[in-house]
Image (cartoon, rainbow, N blue to C red):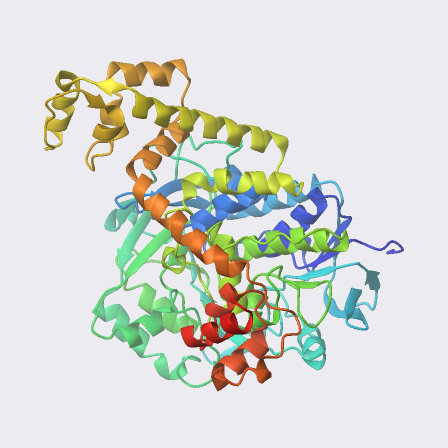
Length: 622
């Protein structure tokens, strides 16, 4: 069956695997996507949503480079919201509710329409290794499939163990078996592995809920979208709802704590800090007698509902009894109970910036196998692994995004430099250059890079260049066009801003905090410019941000340039840290283990102090 040698073999069909396969294939690699179930490609294992704080920025970045996640989300969305709109643009984060079934269907159809992608449905149980290089995979039927590179995206399936109360059974997801063999082989090769935990809430029958007792959560009045291409914009949206737990609900849940695998020692691994189970929230925040629950529809037509905020591994009878005490859930019927799952991961300090492993050449890890949590984090790693696998086997330079270029760059640098002992989730606070890494400019930052490596299409580049020119021309217009006091003062008065006594450039008035684009559009020259140049919402928003935040943006660029000087100081691959006696013992140990590529990366390692960096700089003649 498999006489040919594939360029890239992707193991796993989740968000990381799907993006990896699409990227490698679209760049020209003959690609095989091997997964245990072709019906669950792109499956949303947990909540039916994409994006959110910092995660929305990642989806925009994936789209800008030429990935599929933004396109798939737009085609399957049922609601759209721009979060944090009351804050500065660095914090604005797009989020979409998706139709779970359509999302997976769109992913499979997109991959089937992608040339160079083959599919095979079977468990991969091991790797084919020649010396220190991977040369293929072996399936559970004993079939050897040869490949020049392999990307592992196993999600929660590696020795997965599902917990519901005192019951536990092997599985990588409800109703699907776990993967065995890969962890054991990798640890025998010298890899370090660990265990992590995640969880999911009950799914319930929407027909059994009383939405009149809940708080409606509608989408934005004018919904946006994720992709920079011509994907559909929502004409109608599904509402979500919000309810709350209560002291009574908490007491009912506490009755099952003695049977909880979290508290009786059955679960020993660490779960996601920022997405705790309901029992963990009750235990950690004992002073709170209420927690929010977001009631999210699973699609346009299905009655299945996701109870966001009620993730749990308590016994099913305790889950049911407690949830029936939540307002609006008095007659709730379960589709299935919530559960926790433990799985193997490999500390990501064992990887290079390309996501290639340091121990085995041409082997890449992406997604939850690296200790991350979230669809978006996984998808971005899959994209980068697929890109770099293609580039490596074709003898081309690696594709690495720096911390001032993308949230994806921050994510990967954090993982391989600092590692993680708990499921890693992206936040805007993790990015020191978040004013540069906004969701509105992901195409300006990354589409030229995606085009240069042969992934982003010429259409994407053309659209980006047109947007850049239009917004730049609009900024120039504000800088060169004057406005008279009698025209601008009514606007300034309406926002309680100091009036002007003489004519001045529009740029100056527009820079004031309370003056918005809507205000400026009331001026005839501005409205005429927009009409004559056919400016859309994106170009106008980009111009407004460039004008209002020019000082902040320039300051971050200057800081990034300073850091870049340390990025340019390379550390040799075989550098012997043991001979530098002036380094602290901890620094020597960490530097030997992680083997940073540059001085800048070394400075971000936990345990490496500024004085240790000074020692390295002195030794290297700087």
